[in-house]
Image (cartoon, rainbow, N blue to C red; front, side, top):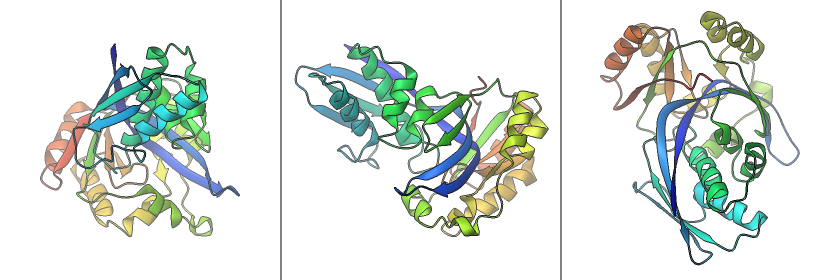
Length: 285
């Protein structure tokens, strides 16, 4: 028996880090939505209890370093499951891009194995388990617009977003999230996003109010590793994006446009500056 789960990429409309806990984990305040760029995770049950992972790209580990593998092991261990699973990941989301590719694959594994192993767990239970794998996995279990707080485990589903289009552009460099977080100095963080204004814009279905509250506190750090980020944000705005910023720990930059015609123009123009460019819709609700 096989299931296939869609694993959509995410973007951070806002990313704020408030403080660091004693265990080294960060306290987050983020507004996130998923987009229709997605991996596809194929899961087949095994007769033994082994977990195996394979991908169609040479850039990802296929052992215990893979987040999809870790998610399967966590679920298997927590619920004393005797069956194993063969996991095949069809990659479309760029790797190490700030789009949550590894986390959304792990979330898809949790959802898929929950069905195959007939565990009947709620999304809330799966999200709590996902936190053992990565701080973005709880959000990716839901993959709906949400305010994400705590260590990443507190998911508050939001009202429907105002309609817009998203242009994604990933520079050739890849960024390690742990590397960026190690350099996060809270005393140096001065420019926080106005998350409350962003949430107010969403609740009022007001696109302009929403984008006025956006921001990402990690962008200045990632910029020191990849100065293409600033340049690409400037180019997106020059070509007509109504806002442009980095997603996650980067280096992917995204621009938002209310009108498809404007988004199409930004998309076509950015293809002259970047090899990996995508025009996608967000998950609005």
